[in-house]
Length: 146
Length: 407
Image (cartoon, rainbow over all chains, first blue to last red; front, side, top):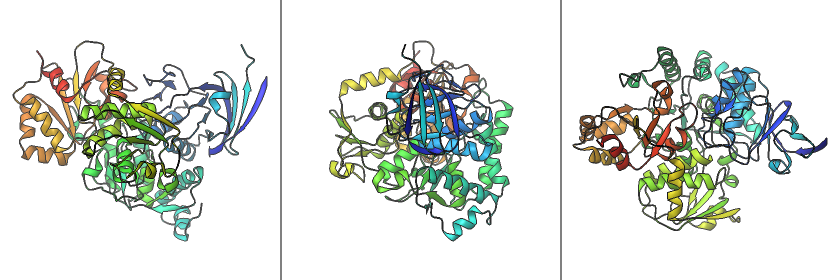
């Protein structure tokens, strides 16, 4: 298994790992996530129908309604949050949601952005990714090429 | 982050637990984005969330129970107020949801919020000057504040707004700083949008092409109105998370293209032609035939003129009994529209007015609606998704009236 280490900016603290879910499309939690299940419900998104619970989700930017932070809090309360988040630029809506989930519900979800390499180029769906939100790095363990 | 002595005391809890919690949220957020300090704010637009989320009520009551009092009295986004409960005999709100909505409203009012219930606070006297740092929620209002007014707001989420209104401060980062407000993508229009409907569609297309970016739009006519920019920004924010755009010759930070880019080179350039609009309309149109259960007009909340235009189209017509025609508007606009006779015309036609309301705060899915019509790019983007799952006929105001009155 090949390992790649990438430096990024630490947005929210915590260390976690999981299988990667990768998209080039922006993603919004508000009207995009079923908080009771973790299922993606944005009808215009390529992730529609997938479940982000326990995954390391990789998307470039946020979008949509700024109630996204509350969707994240609700999902955190119900145990349906992703393991970690990697963005090109983290939407303050996403940052606010995960910071408050930590402060109010003690749910640590590492979030990093501005990686030194384009995460969509180096992370494929299903790769194992470990995100360190304390130091602002992530490690990609690539599956062997199919 | 540098904190003043007073801010240190606030963070230490010397001004109460609500202030401490607010300061914790604001400083954590500021640290994440590298803010050097907090900046005083005098304008907050706050939000109550869809009350089916237990955290929405929990959060608001937690701040109130901790003794929260707003230093900055916020205007508040539309909510499911008691006046808008059970507006149709077959579309009622479950008792539990009504209780949750009422609890949330009581908590925010207890802390001193202004009961303005509108997504267009800038039409209700919450009008920051160009360059003023503010904390607003509601993506359509944020993009208006940043772009049209030239004020400065990040995309704040709920309840960061509550924390900022209690502390009277915001982390000075992101779009509050000059260097983060430069345009990064150029959008050239090769046609005149003219109608409100076209501005809606245009916003959707810009949001799709420039997601997460700060677009600089060239080619908008000089007679573009604030209302047109309102609907354009709302659709762009919903589709692409746009929090700020510049329109050359139109918006305050873009007297010229050079000023809008602050000396930088655009990352990419995109041309929008009239034929792209047709594709945009098709993209937003998810109606595959079948009866229209409801017509939803008033997103974002309309001006009195827009209400007047709708009344003009409805005059003498009767809405079919199987179609619910809903108009969402601020109490202020409705009061004036009533004096001008517009409300009477609409009520005679069978329109239901949701004063200070928004359909997104109601439990539509429980009502069994499948198909709706709207003239709003924002609604058309949002309603097909969770928790609504509706098919949308996206059409102009005339088309909306036609959908509700054709026999």
